[in-house]
Each structure stands twice: as structure tokens, then as C-alpha cells.
Length: 89
Image 1 (cartoon, rainbow, N blue to C red):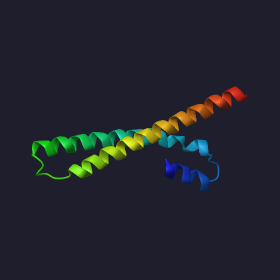
Image 2: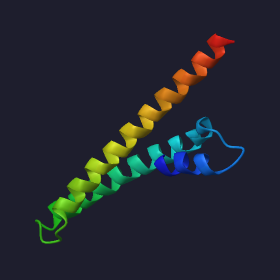
Image 3: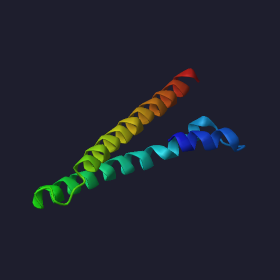
């Protein structure tokens, strides 16, 4: 999402609202990160911790949840903007 906002600042013909295309991408990447972290934790449990990566799995899960929450927040803000635009007309 920050990259999409950055791109809209420097390309002509795009406005800030056009950065909303990054919302589904952020949600999908967040869910994917949480799923991969879950698989890693299951693998760690199966190998009784010998596979390593417990901390990396925890950090991945945290970042995945954070990314998903940021995408949901962005979706709420774009939805609010759309409703206010309709009401203002």
C-alpha cells in the first residue's frame, strides 16, 4: 500500500484514491504470510524444534496479521470516502 501511494504521487493521471488497487493485494499477502507461518510452526512441532525457525515463524505471523489489518483499515477508509462522495453530490 505505501508503494501504491508513492506511485500515485509521481505519475500524472493517477490520484490517491487510485492506490486502492493495492488493498486486495495486501489482504492476500497478509493471509498468505499467516498461512506460511502456520505451516512453519507445524513443521517445527513435527521435528521437535530441530528444524529451527520458531522466531522467524512468529515474526512472519505478526507481520502477516499486521499487513492484513492495514489492508482492512485501508478498505474501510476507501469505503468511507466513497460513501461521503456519494452523499456530497
